[in-house]
Length: 87
Image (tube, rainbow, N blue to C red; front, side):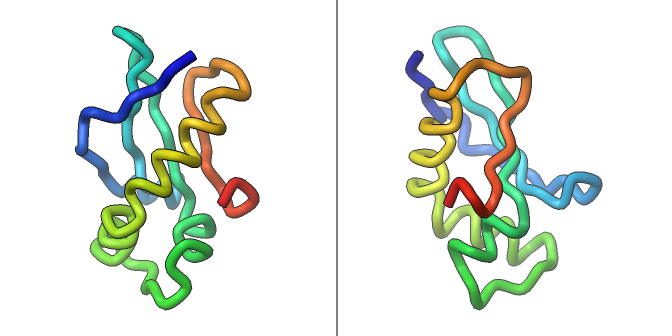
């Protein structure tokens, strides 16, 4: 199972309090959510408004993608949540 992240789009989901992004395993698309707590662990000085959360995601994108690939490797699901314990 190999996951790639060619789509650089991301958005803040206020309901889940997470930044959403997408990964692809061949033609299969999967949604990933990195929580505010996980982003705070990656970037402790971050403010928790949508603009700063997206900025923190962009700053830590490569690291988040590596974490997402590890979580994806644990087994296939519809969506994947990356939380502070994964960071």
